[in-house]
Image (cartoon, rainbow, N blue to C red):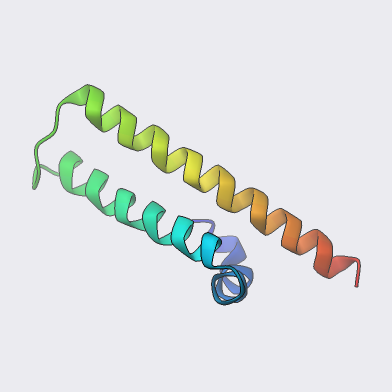
Length: 76
């Protein structure tokens, strides 16, 4: 997720427990979705779509936190 911000993500994960939790949950959902799409797990389509929306919401939240961090760092 958000590979172009890898360095910033490493810093924020240490400084912000909420961000770390969001990041971990996003990665867990990503793996679960891959397992379902590749046939290792089974799930109804509607439930899968719900997981995908939750994953996207977490990504959006993490991205917003990264942008705030970048702005704060640039203003120093």
